[in-house]
Length: 251
Image (cartoon, rainbow, N blue to C red; front, side, top):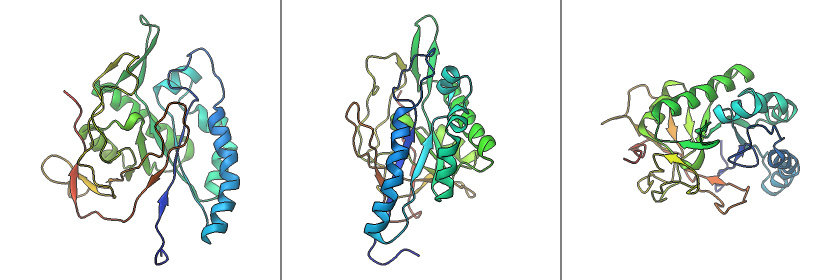
């Protein structure tokens, strides 16, 4: 039970390559993640000493088609960094999936952000969740899209796959064509002005499904400046009484 007067803070760390549009021929280690793991070891002690409670983090790992293309297997990070993930589980951390929908385009010889292709989005979500559950032999409890992108169809798919929490949405953010305007892309990132700042159960269609497992949890990103590796998420209270739709994709 949560002690009176304490505010729960959810710290979500994306486990991914150091760059977004990585060279498909260069299987370089994820140095940012390696540094985050080192930081977490000391941060646990510091936070526990300050709060009197154990510190447990959320780690969302990239297991999508870009990882598969570059590293030969979508499961590469879970296998390459097996000791780190074992350490997370030993400390009671939450593990989940963080997915980007980049597709390698051979004629362009570059990555395309395929947010406007529902079939490609579904492929990446299914690949990521399936890889997570197979490699770790555990259910994927939380999910987080890259670039705060989301759609009704994607949220419904996550519910179908048994994912309990989505940590993608960022309340109040405006619609943008892309976070990477210099890169080819389809679709766009929808506005999230109506997203509540607390956990909620999203509706599908006109009303929420009777047996929905999913709960949307809005995140407040700590920094979005280029080169920043710190992302923070927090929620103030638990509520599933309000029914909201996932933001629609742009037309």
